[in-house]
Structures are given as C-alpha cells and as structure tokens.
Amino acid sequence: MQSVVRVTEGCSCALSHPQDAFCNSDVVIRAKVVGKKPLRDGPFGTMRYTVKQMKMYKGFEKVQHVQHIYTDASESLCGVKFDINKYQYLITGRVYDGKVYTGLCNFNERWERLSLAQKKGFNHRYQLGCKCRIKSCHYLPCFVTSKNECLWTDMLSHFGYPGYQSRHYACIQQKEGYCSWYRGMASRDKTTINATDP
Image (cartoon, rainbow, N blue to C red):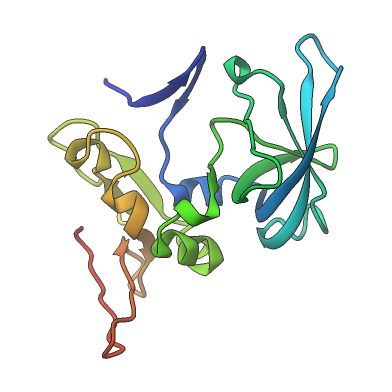
C-alpha cells in the first residue's frame, strides 16, 4: 500500500486533512509568536516559543490560556520553526503535563495562508465532523466502507498538498447519520451550496 508523507530532513509525517488535525489535537489556537528560548532538556533540546493568543478554537478544558508552545529544537526531529513578531499562526498541538507541544506533523500554518473555508472550519465546522472519518485515497479504486466516512482524494487530483478538498471542504455528519463533504459558502444572493461530491 502506498502512502503519501511529508519529509523534512529526517522527519516524516503522513498527510492529514485540516479537519483531522483539528479533531485529533488537544489544543487549537490562533496566535502571534512573540519570542523564543532554547531549553536544554533532553539530549537534543526543546524550543519554547512565547505566544500572544488571539483566539482559542479547541482546548478550553485542557488549558485556560496558552502562553508557551514547545517543540523539538531540531527540524529533523519534527521541530517547528515560527517567525517571531511577523505573522499570526493557526497552531495545533497536544497537552502533556500542562504544556502545549507541537511539531511538523501537526497542522501549523500562517493564518493569512488559510482559505476562507479552512478559517470557518477551525472556527466551528470541523468540530461538527469529529465523529466522521476522513479516508485517504492514494490510488484508484477507492471506496467508502461505512456511512461515517468521506473519501479524501486530494492525493489523486492534485499532486501534493494542499489540495482542493483540504482547502474548501469539511466532512460533516448529516441528519441521517451519514457523513459527506460539505462546502458552505455565502454568495451574494445568500444561498448555501451543499456539495456531497467535490
């Protein structure tokens, strides 16, 4: 079986849809990185970034307010490098011993680079689909095998990441219990488009 991975100097990660990144994270925030400090813990060290949290999308029950983000100091160990005092970032991570950790395998992106659908997804849509399963399709034929699956075909239609489904769709559970791709967008006539097949 083939798998698509993102490789950076020895760190390899399976690609994931931003909705999966949201659902599988303990904490999701939008923040500006305002400082960094290398810590000499462990054999390779940790980088501690100081952040100014703008908004928390997920994780209220884990941490009240995020002031620091921890990551491996080395990119080869999946450490993330953030620019200081330049951009707002969407940051996802896990909580261990009250500290928020992130890495290259988490979804971390400059806020301005996110599509409108992704911003809406992190704001509220993705949480509606956390009971759904996004099933990756790396080669044809691909099939959904249960009613709670959405078939993710970005790896077929767009060579590389991010693809069209990642940028514009969320996998949402419908009233009947089935999960399907949803692209809601308000147009000038205030209509909503509900597409089940991107």
